[in-house]
Image (cartoon, rainbow, N blue to C red; front, side, top):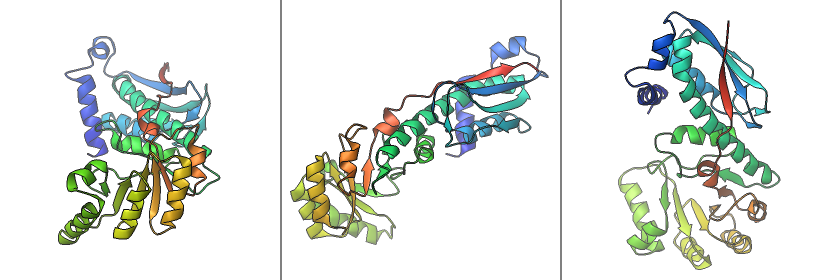
Length: 279
């Protein structure tokens, strides 16, 4: 889905047959200005998308930018001003705010996790625990907040999780069959395998032909043991039960990646407002 497809579908959902509140009382020729006000501290995200939303409705709309995506902002600051037809401003307002508030909330919590591990080599990853049809923008917000993106979907990386392994009949069989399938179909895909204990790790190491080993729901002590066992042969990723209070303990183990679904699905939207400025 392109930006234009997303914006068109979102506006159709919201505007439908017409913005009758605006049509009823605002002349079609009226021109105005609106100011994006920041109402709480955090990391700003979604300004580029906001501009695309306004320009979709009115290519001639003009912006004065005071902030950019990724800026650390404080309550009371102004992110941008937009000048356009009043009908454009009122149609775009809610979609613009919904996207920016959601993305800024994700960027803010992601940055909190990134700051917790800044003294360690571990990188913060997102997951597929996203909002349907808004995944691209949520993952972009993670990137803006200083995190890294895991696979976008089921199509750009193989992840053999517990259900795949159990349904297939074991770790070894799942890895062997996956490599065979990739070769036969000339696919350029990396393989990640989820492990639940040190015995699983040993079985993956014995089988080989993977790129990354996920260490799911390990304690920091067990994770450190697993990382030492893997000894750099493959990338390592910690997952499960990780939060702001305990993430540093996981980062200390030397693990390469720490995936945290909460940076998207537990993010709280940032408070923003788009206020009319009479001209």
